[in-house]
Amino acid sequence: MLKLTRPLAVFDLETTGVAARRDRIIELAAIKVMPDGTEIPKCWLLNPTVPIPPETSAIHGITDDIVKDCPTFADKADEIFEFFRDSDLAGFNSDRFDIPCLEEEFARVGKNFAPSQRKHVDVQRIYHKKEPRDLSAAVRFYLNRNHDGAHGAEADTRATLEVLKAQMEKYADLPQTVEEMDEYLVPNDPLNADRNGTLRWRIEPGKTPELTVNFGKKKGESLRKLLLNEPNYLRWIVKGDFDTEVRMIVKDLLENGRLPPAPGIQ
Image 1: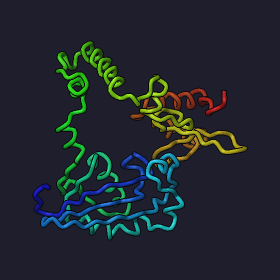
Image 2: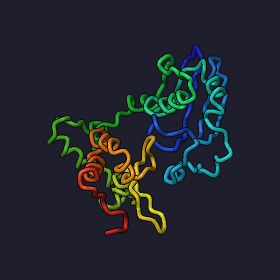
Image 3: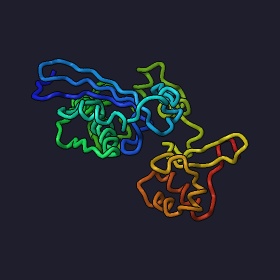
Image 4: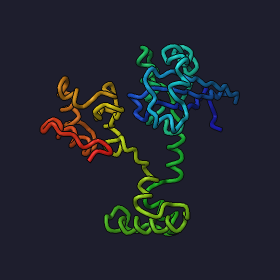
C-alpha cells in the first residue's frame, strides 16, 4: 500500500448517467484509509431527485422505487463533506468522472470540494501506464512482435487487421458477424436517435412519438417544442461540440422542420 501522510479516500459512484457535470449521484461508496492503515468504510444511497433512466438501472440495479425514500445529496452533503474533508482521493477513472461528479454535486449545495487542493491517485491511470492499451501494445500482446512503422497509416491499418484476426482466433466466444459484433461492443437501443443517445425518442401509447434531448437541463424536452419556444438552444447544439449525426438531425429540424422517422415507423 502507498505510504500515507494523511487519509486517502478511495471511492466509487453509481450515477444517473455518464456525464460527470450533469448527472446525479445515486450511490457513493468510500473507504477512508488512515495513515496507520485503519480503514473506515462508508456508503450512501441517495435519491438523485431526477428520474433514473431504465438503461442505467439495468447496469447498476438501482431504480427510482429503490431510492424514492432515500435522502438526497443535499440532505447528506455536510456528512459526506466531513468524511472527505481532510483526505486525498483515489478511484478508478476518478480524474475524469468520479471527482468531477462529486465536485459538481457539492457545488449545487454551495460547497467547494476543492479537488485541486488534494492529491489524486487514479488507479486507471496506473493501469494504463503499466499496461498500455494502444495499437503497439495490442500487436505485442496478440501477435508477439513489435509494431514496426507505428503511427504510419498503412502500417497501422495492416496491424489493426492482423490484431482483429488474432482476437477472433483467441476468443472463441466472440460474435462471428459484423452485426453481432457491433451489438456486442455498443449495445443498440432503438430509442436512441444517434449512436451515443444524445437524442432519444419518447414513445407513449396513443401519443405522437417525440424526439427529445437526453442530456443537461433540457433532458426529456421535445425538440419540436424547443423549435417553437427556444430555437436558440437548437442553434447552440448545431454549433456545439456534438457528434456530427446529432448536429445534422437538429440542423434539419431548424432548416426544414423535419425529423428522422421514429423507431418502427417507415
